Structures are given as structure tokens and as C-alpha cells.
Image 1: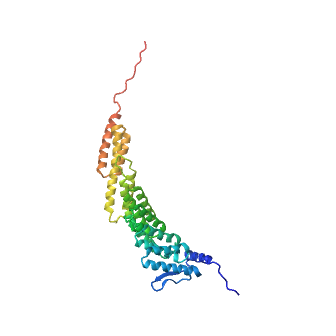
Image 2: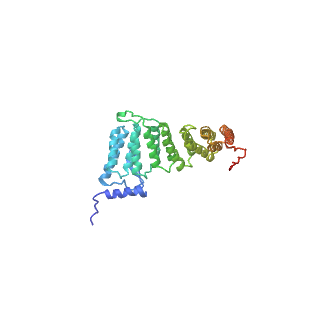
Image 3: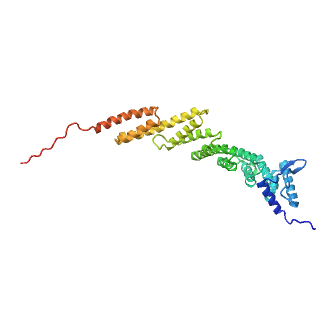
Amino acid sequence: MPLLKVRSSRPLLIILALLTCFTGVVKADLTWTPQEGWHIEGGMLSGLTGTEGRDALDLMNKARQSEEGKSYRSAIKSYTKITDKFPTSIYAPEAFYRIAQIYIAEKNFYKAFDNYQAILSRYPNVKRFNLIISEEYKIASAVLDGARSRLWFGIPGFTNRERGIGFFEQIVQNAPYSDYAPLALMNVARGHEFLGNTDEAVDALDRLINSYGSSVLAPDAYLRLSKLHAQLVEGSFYDQGETKQAITYSEDFMLLFPSDAKIAEAAKNLDSMKKILAESKVKIGDFYFFKRDNYTAARVFYNEAITSYPNSDVAKSARAKLVLVDAKASKTATPSTQPAKKKLFYFF
């Protein structure tokens, strides 16, 4: 009986890749030693057979030798051939990882991140998942803090904090259930705040407390939200929507984290915002009282000022003005005490 000849290894390659990525059936580790080069341990196959398998292994060894000799351009070229020609083999994610490591050594942070991301997007069940997320986090932190990625011939580029923010957003998408997700969102907020994008910083912190309310970062997120909304307050003469938001987050912080070390800071923020809100009510009341002689409206706003911050000097002032309103209103509303004279009609 003649031996079965396999015309192409592609079908087998695809099957092995699917098993590796989705079922975990083919478990193999690719290891490297200076003496033996690259070799597979604990698994079945590399995902390649025959000539392809030998070619891939030769390229991997050639790339690693170049890397060890610090011939980085040559190493990247060989590793890239692996990722292009043998994308479903066990060698491909390792090749991407080695390329990323080379770019890290060269301080080319953008390309390093891109290659780490290529691993996570193409091989989501890679064993190095947590390590790669950690590496991405380090890159994002460096870029956000102003590190300049090296470009051609090692020339440093410009700082690009926006790109650092984008890296952190990618980390949240990559690992939404990891401890890195709330950390990444806090850094997104920090970056936007540094750039003056207050609305975007608020959005990131809102996502943090809504999705990761039990995180150790949640108290800082609530307090930071209170301060950011306070920064948007333009004064007691303007709309008080931001003031009310700042009050809400300060009160939530004090309610949810009563033993937090920053409770006094939250109380101070709350006091400041309540004072502005009460002052706003008094000013509106003054307008109706002194400019429009509308005593009913004036009473409403003076009472709202008292309700907003009852034990404050602003409330004391509002109570005094209520007395003036009542006095003036009583004068204008006092009816005449003389009885109306009856008209007499005479007929002649």
C-alpha cells in the first residue's frame, strides 16, 4: 500500500493554529538557549511540517543570532519574515515579541507597542498575555510622562502625550477585567487633565467608578471628579450645574469611604461648593427683590439658599433678607382701614 503523500501542509497548519488559539489542545513552549538555539518543549508540533518547518526554524535562529550580536536591523528583518510567511506557526507570536523587545532596547516605543499589540490581537490566548499587558502599560506610562520615541537613526521625536492616552485606552480594551484596566483609566484621566481636556478626564473617571467601583482607585476617582467639576464652576453668577455635580461626588465620597485619609479634603471641597451654590441663590433672590419687587420669587430663592447650606454665613444673610422682604411686602399689601363711603343719589 503506497504511503499517503501530503501535497500541502496548509490544511494541517490551519487546524493546528485553531487548536492552539481556541482549544488549548496543542500546548507547546518555544524556548531558546545559546547552545541549542530555538526548540519546542511540551507540545506536538510547531504548526509547520517539512521544508516550511525547517525554513522557519532556520529563520528564527538566524534572527536570534543577529539579535544577540546587536545587529538589530538584520534581526527584525528575519523575524518579520517569520510573521509574514508563517503567521499561524508557534514561531510567529515569539517573533513579534522579539521585535518588540528590540524596539524597546532602541527606545522606539511606538513600534514596540504596535508589535505587542499585534500579538494580543492575533493570538489572544498567548501565554505571555499578562506580561505583554504589563509591557504595554510601561510604554504607555513612559509616553504619557513625556518620553520621546526614537525615530530614524536614533533621533528622538517629539513628546506625544495624546498617543500615551491612546495606549492606555487600548489596554482597557485588551484587558477589561484585569487590574490594569482601572489603572489605565486613571492614567487616561491624568493625561487629559494635564492637557486641559477636563471633559475627557471626567469621562474617564466616570467610566472608572461605574465599571470598577470596588477598585482601590475608586475613592481617588470620586474625589478627583469632585475637584474637576469644581474647576468648571465659573462663579455664583453662572449656571450651577457643575457646582451640583461637585457636591454630589463629594457627598458620595464621604458616604462611601468615611474612613478614607482624604475625608477632610472632601469635606473642604463640599463646604466650598455648597457656599457657592447658596451664594448663587441669594444673588438671584436679590435680583427679584431689589430690581423687580417680586417678593414671592425672592422668598423662594432666599429659602433655597438656606436649604442649600443651612449653617453658613450665607444662610444667615438670606434669613435677614427674608425679614426685609416680609416687611416691605406687608407695607405694600396693607389694605385701607377706613370704611368705604356710600354714594348718595338725590332725585329732584
